[in-house]
Image: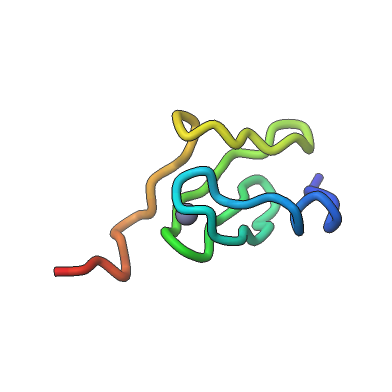
Length: 61
Ligand SMILES: [Zn+2]
């Protein structure tokens, strides 16, 4: 089950406020790369629930 497009469009990452993309059972932030779990079709947008990006990708050094 995925998140309705209308809902996805108005939601932003609670960490960096970038848009999110639906990845099925998670929503991935296009900005910082964290993922938020989707439980029974309901995205859990709590910063505490965020799954960190695997290895940054675009870290400033
Ligand atoms: Zn983010």
